[in-house]
Length: 440
Image (cartoon, rainbow, N blue to C red; front, top):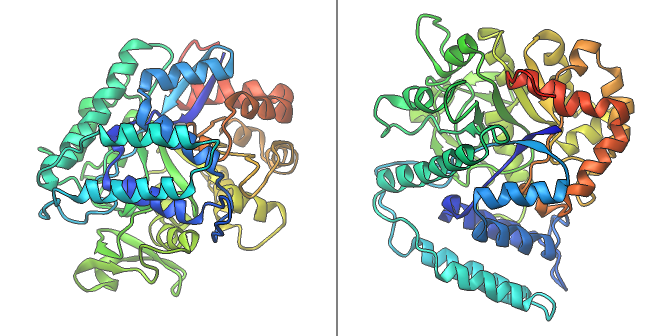
């Protein structure tokens, strides 16, 4: 028995125009055939498997597939992802009826342009299912709410099916002003020890600050999401890396603080931008997607912002996912002064007793390659005993499929790399983070 503390049960419920725009961004950089991209880390075979899984699967099937690949009993901790405002800054905008069809045609055109004899059948199968999928349309307020609750309901159903083997994390963007009673009331309705969701997932590069007023307030008399989570010891996982995904907006309103590199510290957005509108230097679409994501991550996900959160809520149970990211870990191992994400994880684990970090989407051959054993010997063993008690195993499946399809091989790397310590990071530590008693 072990716990995969970071995975995803994504399905076509989040296949919005945002997602397809992201797929297009990935596809431009995918080194297939004679195509030459700026990022050579996603192979066509993996890309197709990822799209195929997202369109075809259900959360139940994803859990079953993971169990078959792992070949042993395990607990899954799937994280939601609310993409509602990742490409639409306002609920007052109308979604054009042909938005989805336009993006779908672009994706289909891409797939056909890359097809080969070996994958033509798979591509045609994907296109067929895309043609049969109808996007929920209407104004953004209606669309966002339907899309969000479709994902919620899917995870509630899989939780009801696999009661003691699936413990989902809830995700909601603080910009959901259309939700009656606000996001904290919605979180309270779904998250808790007697609720279908056991924790909360935040992904601030999607376009909001860690100090958004719904999440954070310097006045302890005001109940916020962090205050409620701290009081009830609800575990919170945050994306913590300058890699991954981000919002696709070139400008949008931001509430709370942003990190300003020129000042070397967080600054209130209202003191920095006219009408609180952040304007990015890099714009979408772009061939330099890594730079695009990094700019948004620095502004909205910088370690200094999260230290502000912990200074205000020092007992918050907070998991910094990915240990700063593979690129940051590699720089840390090479003693680079630029490895501040990974360095900050270690510092905050030392300063705050409820700070954890997971090793999801790790040691994949097409990323910045960091062997598990190197991390174990050079980072993990250098941590204090109580800090090692807060390191978690995770896979990031099925996002992992973009880089490595074989989940069983991924598990074996960790078992070999951590040896006798694997049980510690994959069972004892996650059980403590999740407040699960009696897990053996």
